[in-house]
Image 1 (cartoon, rainbow, N blue to C red):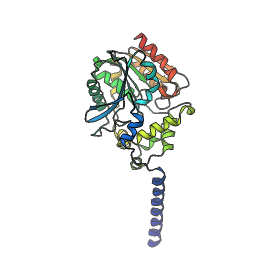
Image 2: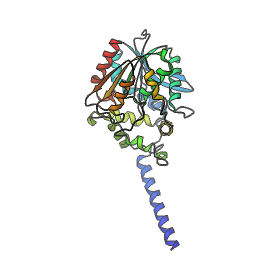
Image 3: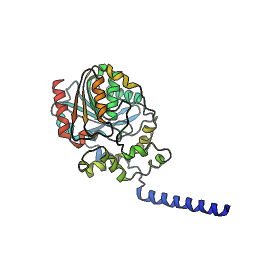
Image 4: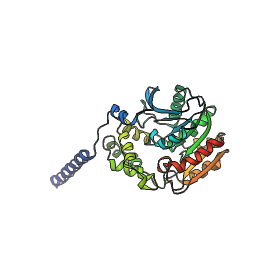
Length: 317
């Protein structure tokens, strides 16, 4: 009886081991050397600056005499490239600064692996200081939006106005979550994703935050996939989800005095539309714009349509 049971266990373990070998063989990826990624994703006008022990990837474009530049922050899993199309238009009349936040893009992880909101706010303060930016129009999508409004409550004198694009910050439950986000929160299983990163998983996760899946190009999927293979980014992605969320800071939103554009996609499943209405209710000086037929990544899915209210806001600000 015991021998039979031991044999079954042995067969199961061998089967699991064989399955893992197959998975690693097909979906295991080594980190892509940073210099190779730079050659593809850090072409002009990309630059790097030392902040908090990291080499931060950023782009600073447009009219350099603009004393109040637009600073744009991306969301989880993304990079400064998510604002490519917006930037082409905005630099005609403005100075635009974009940055790969720690844990993402070419910047790589925080050395201390602390992905708290407080630490992101401190990082942004140090980055702006390093760039000599004393005041800015601060915009962000998703996580970037959350960093933006938290920063404005901590350093209000450094923020001229806010642009919140599908921003997080309130306690909420998503209607749909990218599969990569889900797996990153599963104990033990998430450890495998520091070296197993199926491209189809990345593709499915990007499609999840678009409404029109046909707008998810091969180029966009390649960018998300390849930048995830920057050394340290996969571990940082997991670490970010392990960080305990601050469930009380949203009470500070009503204290924000800056003019704010709350920009949302009607079909945003990650940060549902009711979150936009919460911002609109709590912010004392805001404009709410809801774009029909669009999802969470407005800037990529429909750059022309989503940029119109931004231009109007900047013109009237």
